[in-house]
Picture: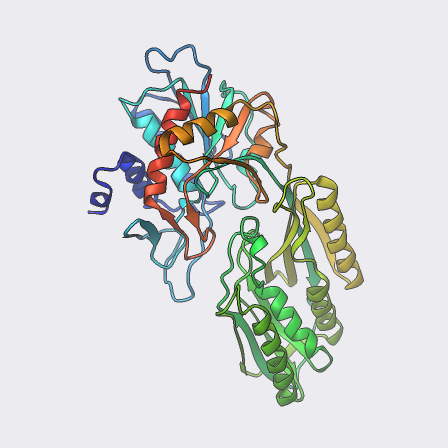
Length: 479
């Protein structure tokens, strides 16, 4: 029934494979099942296949007749997906299939992320590998793991089983925009050792919700509210009168935090509630355009026997105010491009520590380092420990790239419209893959996908169809 929505589309097989993939859990860090699915796909078709210890998969298909002299082309994407859902959803990403919904030209999921990022890349790759009538040079489908949590899969890729000299990454999310450069980045983890004391005060719950959230690279320029930072402002306003009982916020390092909450203890809860509600009015006004549904709720909470010490509470609240967030520098080389940003992605209590995860992105390595140093300085001043993880390099622009010029011509030929060559503030695996594949010409493309990394993620069916046609034409025109 689902596939009948795509009858008559050139890309029907792409959506068939997308539907099959959507039945298989593929949360970042839990890709073994989808990785094995890809291996079985290859073996069932007698295609050459490799699976490494990180569960990355390479599938190879020989050239069709007449295309043997074209150098192999690598089709690349990642198999994992960001797993976000609405507060009401009962979906279990570890076992439940994604429920796909078609509404006109839109494909979305039922109260969860869709997985178009980056299931569409893998689906296009499988459709190419499965086809018996699409002309093509030798193809190598490279599907990586853990892209959404630090690109660990791509970091493990070597050139051992790859012979291609052109790589087409299908992880961009705007049709007609071909990417040739991306930001690098790292995560900073700031740990506070939790120390508690007896609590004899009443308690309040402060909750920030209703935010749009979104991809911390692609949508950071929209300057949407970050729930963790909003919560920090609220607590700072009442800092002298409160102790923290518990606090949490965000879900993923690369997602703009759309929910955060804290339970606080105060001797005069009416005074604290009044302070927070007054500050809330100003914050809501500030974000009335980008986040009109911002909700700040202050309510009575169950009494708590313990709370964080006053010193620890103050240090945490100070750090929440000091930590950099959002757009920090704009590029001087490319108009409209964010050069450097930070995202306060996750705030979580675990193993007697409260940990902030702050994702830093920049197309300039020294700028990225500067922001990391600012985080480290704020951590030092608030008696916290800070460490860096998941560093990945920027993908530098190659003025001599041939595939970018061919892509522009092919897109014009297929759609009748002019495409653009751009850089992106988000991280792409191309930056990491350039190390083992230094002499490979790379480009990134994709169909229109919106609100990635949120339960509102949706894609354009007609855009997928057009970009599928572009991909098929592109692979036979690359020399």
